[in-house]
Structure formats: C-alpha cells, structure tokens
Image (cartoon, rainbow, N blue to C red; front, side, top):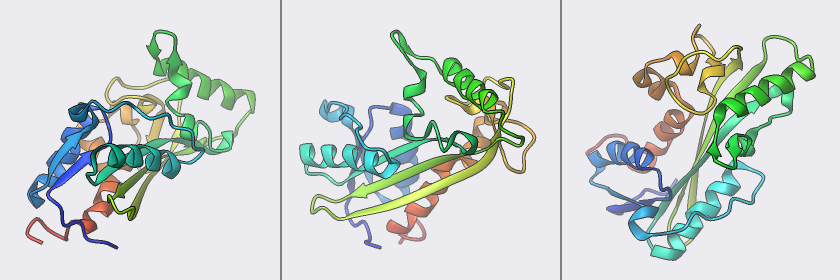
Length: 206
C-alpha cells in the first residue's frame, strides 16, 4: 500500500457534509481537504456498473482538472433477493422530475421483494468503496460493508436514503432510528474509512 505523503487532498464531491467528514478524519495528519465545489468542477456522468468503476470516474475527473490527488467514493444498498439491486443504481431509484424522493425508492424495494415473495429475513448490505488516486495514476481502493436486513414499514426519521428500512445485524432498530453518532460508527463508509487510514499512518503522528 502506498503511503500518502501530501498535505492537500481533493474530495471528489459537492456534498459539504461529506467534505467535513473527511476533513475531520484527516486533520490530525495535517491534510487540508478541498471539494469539487472549490474548483467549480462539474459532476461527471457515472456510467460504470460497479462501485469501484464509478468512484474511479469521479476521482479521475477531479485529478485531471486540478492535478491534485483525489478521493472519491461510491456506495449503495444491495438486496440479496433482488440479485443485488438497487446496487450502483441506489440513488437512481429515488430520482423524480422534482428531485430525489427516497420514500419512493424504499417503497419500490419493498414492492419488488413482495412481488418475488422473498423469504424472511430479507438480507441486504450497505456497501461503500473509497478510491484514492494520485496524479501519476496510482490508486488505492478501500471497501466497507454493513450486513443487515430489509424491514417494513419504514422506521425512524434519522439518517438518509434507505436508512428507515435497513436494520443492521446485531441491532433491533433501523439506521433511521439510530442516533447519528451511533450510525456513523457502524456505517459502511466508516468501515472503509478506518481501512483507508492505513494510507496515512497508524496514528496522527505517523
């Protein structure tokens, strides 16, 4: 694994919350994080059929435009009885002419499970892929998964996306019912982030 020795990193996102999450994680290493919005970069079209492929598209677009090392992520929900769907199309299921509506997406997921008469437990996982890309083309990939099951009706108003129908293994409440601090420790992105920290040293001094 290549060690990251730089002091600036472009987070390939326009999401301010995601930028702040990475900045908080990397600040102890003396790394300053920027976002696509800081450089007025457009969102590239995600045309791959894998999480790592779409993360690579975002990272390459950011590196090409700025010549800075970039970190991109792609994530989604994989439901076993739906052959891994929605997967890379997790956000697409929520698209409407007036923006994203995840209640529609969650209802679609449940209705498709019902149509297939999927047996309980209706197992699923949240998956995250982080891709760190250097300007010379070297990349490191880190993945995280949280296994669980799909439940109905929707439960809780915390979190976002499909959180109200996802109950992680070992818990009796959904991500949508959990305090955000608890979910952020358990989440698929948190798992991937902990793995990524090996690129920056085992502790803040190193």
